[in-house]
Structure formats: C-alpha cells, structure tokens
Length: 197
Picture 1: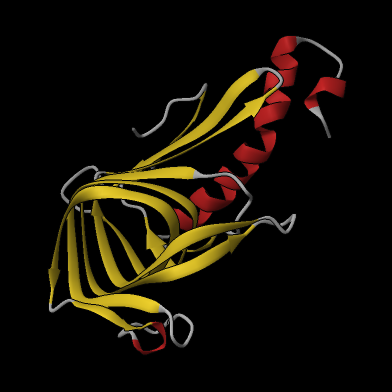
Picture 2 (picture 1 turned 120 degrees about the vertical axis):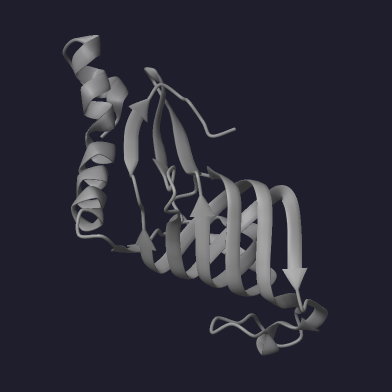
C-alpha cells in the first residue's frame, strides 16, 4: 500500500507509516522480555547502522559475499562471523524515506554494566570503522577453511582470528542474523530520522 494513496489526516498517515515497524517491534520485545530472542533479518534492500562503544568477540572470520534483496538486486558485502559477541552500549538505527518525510527505528541495548550478547552472529556489511585488535589472526586463508561454523566459497580470500575487539565501532550493514541476540536494557523508539552516527 502506498502512503500517497491513503486518505485522512496527515497525523493518520504518519501513524499508518509506522504500523509495520511497531508490529515488528512488538514481536521483538515479546521475545526479549524472556531474556533472549532468536534473530534473523532478511535483506530488505535498505541499509542500517550499528554502533557500539566496544565489540568483544571470540571465533571471528571475514570474507567477501553478496547480499541479495527480495527483488533480486545484489550488493557486494563483507561477511563477518563471530561465534560469541558482547556489545557495550549498542545502537542500531534504520531510516526510510516516505512521502511524509523520514521515519526510523532507533534501538539501544547494553547501556549498563551488562552488554548485549549474540551467539553465531553474522553481519553483511559494506562499511566498518573503529580501532580493532585481533588475536592469532590469519590473513589470506581460503574462505572455505576459516575457523567459524559459517564459511565462504572455495578459493575466495578470507581472514580469521581467535578473537576480535573493536573500540568505537561504526558499521553500515545490509543484514544481521544470530542464533540468539540478548538485548539487555532494550530501548526502542520510532523517530523522525535519528541515527546512531
């Protein structure tokens, strides 16, 4: 349904624009209320931002891949896998342009002493910045032989390490999935376009 074809007040149109976002948020919150929620986000064709004061992980690999949207559009992506990750002061934001302006979701978690946690985390990204420390890093290994459960294609360039620590993480991603994502101190807000960075 296109917003431009809706009738009624401007306020009503804005409410309709955020209904799908609110439904998705309600489902997520229901799982998080139990302490942990399985997460799998298929690529929608929209990029989103992830920021954290610190990401500390064990079992890391990275190799080239392709993120494919539902309409078949393909985007080059760096695929990163982390077996166990802790994210301190996690922020995630996504913003969409609508006929009524920008509408977004801003999620924060792990803002206190207890970080957000993820197991079997996989991220498809096209931009990453921060200060990183790798332990026992191997660069230039075959993507099919990396030390994580999820692997790339035979013959592709890859890197892996026993652990990864990134300070000041800023990342632009196409997709994120995890076996379990525990969002401690979760806060979710509908915004007019506020982003993590």
